Image 1 (cartoon, helix red, strand yellow):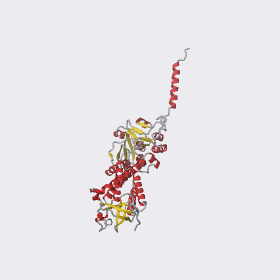
Image 2 (cartoon, one colour):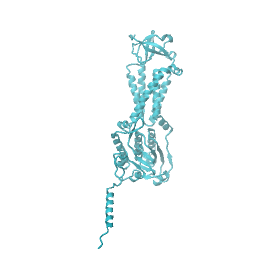
Image 3 (cartoon, helix red, strand yellow):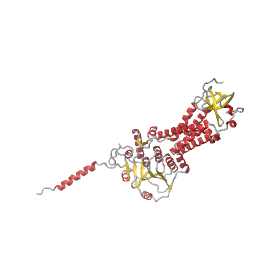
Image 4 (cartoon, helix red, strand yellow):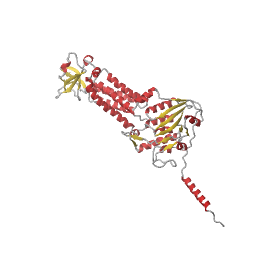
Length: 471
């Protein structure tokens, strides 16, 4: 009798080994997700999300979704972005989840970081061949532009935001979390300590994307709908202007010019030109940030109240209470005009750099304003253009230099401060009461002052060596 062949035994062993390996290999996690119904009739509107996700774009997308709120309408987002501001992405995400129209996004070729959050919030996700989707961990941008990781609690918060967004659209929340946190592992998809980014095939097989489309024509074909007439929506001229005004560099410049115009008017009262210029610059600042939904009437009210209190400090010199409170209100209004905390907690806004950037812009503007104001107040009144702006005090404001007092006769005269000079107040000199401005620092009521010069009708005094009692 022939012994049994070894070949069948080997085949059995190989089969058993392959079966064991297959049994230990995790299968893809398939969520019960059916393709939402696509309206066969109704208008289709397209919005391009290309480049950085920023407040102006978020405001525009939110407006589009609010205006086109009929269930038979479709809003198509054409996405190609590497990310942007987290608060702007959250605003778009919230608007997408609340939209009544059917939302459809076409990722070509990438939706990275903030773009991944927006993509997960859409009803239908299409992705182009060679596309990429994921890498949504929040980062902080340092002063040198270098990216640095955020605190662990911020990463945890963002994980929950991504997971909740995916779950709302019946997508796998674990995959969404793995896009944020490298420590999250999806069996069979990514390894440990790897931040998840999906390619087209992975996005389709794991039901993050619903279909692949190399073109819009292919997209509508796979949705079983005749190619519709698509209306491409773009920001209005007002929105484009507001986006320009809200750019960080221009916004900071408007703050500096606005504060400078007001400061120059307070120190050198004129025909109001510098004050109007300052208010115009601040008005443009708040207009731009109001349109992009970063500021409202509250922030503008803070600045106006602050300006009024600072003006009162000059009119009724005291112990700098009005001025201090007014300055705090102005700075607070400018700060809140740069930051929106509606979509995220304070700690997240701080750790992602939104609040530090706003503080740097505001205090940088104040520092530049102080330097420029010191130069202008010292040199501008002596220039030809400065003299044209400043009021002729002899003719326009007789309370400064009253009739009968020779201008030249005032220079070198010694008088007494009737009120605090901070830096403007009233003095008595050669038995006449006039308005004057101290050259440097402040002078308390009762202090002895000497007239040093006349600048554009403004009496400039300097504190004398010895104080005398007031009248």
